[in-house]
Each structure stands twice: as structure tokens, then as C-alpha cells.
Image (cartoon, rainbow, N blue to C red; front, side, top):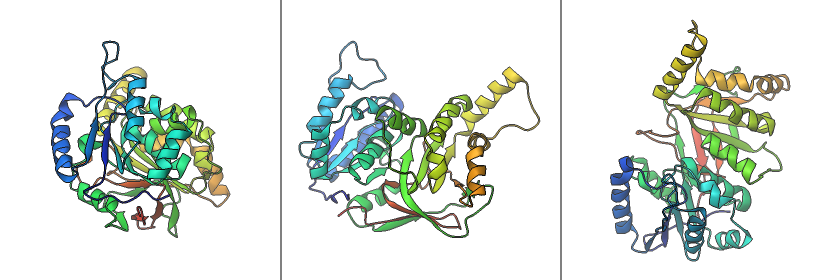
Amino acid sequence: MLPQKINNQSKVNLIYTSSPVEKEDWNDFVFALGKLKQMFPNLNFFEVQRTELDPRYLSGSEDERLKKFRQSLKEVNWLAPIYGGTGCIDIVRRLNEEDLDKLRKTRPIVNGFSDTTSLINYLYFKLKLITFHFANVAGIFDTKNSKLFFDIIFGKKKSFSFLENNYKWLSPVGAPKQKIEGIAIGGNFTVFRDLLDICDLKPRSWEDFILFIEEYDMDMEDSHPDIIALDQKGVFKHIKAIVLGRIAEPEFKSDLQKLNYIFGRQKEQEKMSSVFEYLISDTIKERLVKNDPLYILKVDNFGHNVKTNPMIVPIGGKTIIHPDKKIEFVGPFVE
């Protein structure tokens, strides 16, 4: 299902789904809010009311955020989460048929990043509504690709692609001989795993999908159960391909230092991408035997703190990965 394209008179609703805007991002948010108000006169900012009991890492209670979310559905053309952090799954799990029916009728643009991975994937799996993995409001003007994003949701861009010099095939078999076609899903890896578990999402088959993994900047030991959980669900056994996002080097080096301290230093240090391949090695081997290799493309412009050409991924959109590593998204994305 295609969302409706927007224009400058569209109803734009800004919502808190997760955490409040952090101090270091506040100026960016104020700038974004001002610019969006200039672009869209019919913009509404659904502020949440906090109580003394609400933890500081949440913008408001679960009930309060859900109430504002539902209010924002009454009349909306673009539903825009303000910030990531933690807590979006709280309200996603409580969306009911009435909520989904409103979204089905209005078909708004919905974007999200990091913690709001749960919202954009949930709406695709439940409604088949194409959504967009791109910055939340606080960071929406941080890079030049905001222009590309607006061209897409205004209906000016029918297809677009990404190709960087540092893209790399991790698969043991190297590059595919033919292009890989599938449907884009994914985002933040832990949030995506939680979404499947908490909302009990079970697609009829994973065979049509290309899984985009936002990034790795977490502890290797924390990554372990996330990877195994998706492997247990048969995700890696059937999906077309994986696009593995950036690895935050400072955090990863800190992780290695911790392992060196606990277990002693070794000559060959682990690589996060190698750990990923290791944990699904049985699946990789099994698919090789069946002549159905799992292709893994490593990229550096998908994830947090990407300042140059950050990837925009239409969740539910037709995706083609070419042997030369170009990732192409084929529209239309709106109507």
C-alpha cells in the first residue's frame, strides 16, 4: 500500500514515541521544528504531559504517549516521530484494529530511525504500508539527503540508489552473479528483534525480504542473542540478502579492550562483521550446500552519525542489489 504524497499544505503531525530530545540534540531539534513550520503551515506538535514518576529517559508515560499518538491519527498526512531512544515498542504493541483502520484510510507518510524502527516495520507488516527509514525530526536536516527525502515523499523521485567506494561483499562466495531483488525491511537490529518477539510478527515467509541492519555499536556479547534469536526464527535461512550497516569504531575498540582485559590479548583481534558471520555460519554453510548462498553487503552509510550520504530505505519497497554493490530502490513510493 502506497502512502499519499504530501505537499506544503499537508497536515504534518510531530509525535513523541520514545525518549525526550537529549541536550546535545536540542538545538538541532529547535532548528528542524522552525524549518518544518515554515515548510508546512498545517503542522501540529503533540506535546506530552509528564509527571514526577515518569523516568527521565522517556518523554512521557506509556499511556500519555499512546493517547497523543491516537490523537495524531485523526487527521494526518505525515506522521513524524520526534526522537528515538527507548520506548516506541510500548505504544506499537498497543495499537489496535481501530488505530490501524485509521492509518489504512489516511495512508500517511511515516518515517523513523533507531528506536522508531518498530513503528515503521510494524506498519509495513500489518498494513503493507510503505514507510521510510530515515532520520527522526530532531535530525532530519542534519545532512544534505533531507532534500532527497522530501523529493521522495512529495512524489518527485520515482527511484534512487546508493553506491559508496567502501561497500564490501562479506559473503564467502563474493559478489552474486546476478542482481538480487527483494523487499526492504529492518533498521535497528535489537529493536527489530524486539518487535518480532513482543508483537509476535510472523510473516508467511522471509524469502522475499532483504534485511537492512542499521549498525553495530553494541557489545559483542549483547549482539550474540540478537543474532541467534533471528537465526532461530529462520530469518537468515530464507531472506534474499543482508545489508549490514556501519560499525562504530570507538565503541568496538572499547569492547575489544574489555575482552583483552578479561581473557588476555590475542594476536588476531575479532572483527564485528566476522562475529556476525560466525554466529550464523551453520546457516551460511547450509545455504551454500543448497546453492542458495546468503549474500551480505557491508556498508558504512547506514546507521547513526553518518554525515555523508546517509541511506534512505523505503520499508516495504522494491529493492535491487547489483553485483557491483549498488543498492537501488525502485518506486513508486507514494501516490
